[in-house]
Image (cartoon, rainbow, N blue to C red; front, top):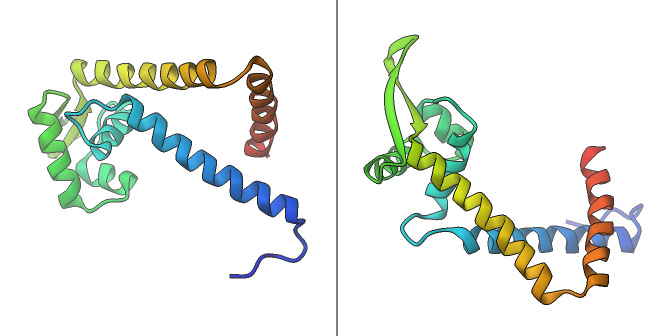
Length: 148
């Protein structure tokens, strides 16, 4: 695929570098907080369920972009760990809703806290005050792009 000739070389380079860094940084943040007893896929399901009162396996599979059989296996393992539970849908008894348990909610919150702390520690330990201010300024620009 050729690049659009109307785009400046600096816009193309900035786009490529921002996407690459965001992708690597996202992986590092996720890996920094994940406990060894769950996979990234399981962690993703826990986070997705944290904003819901309960959803079906089909809805969860669609949201995660995986097959129904895959989500069924993931939910079964999370249920066995006591992190999610299945209960009948009060509006349709034929359906089961999947939701976080209290332990699942704690696990998600601990993960979020670990994400925040990991990045803050990295910025503290590996960057100067001037570099941190540069990051803050760059985030202002990226936030503007994200809102438009």
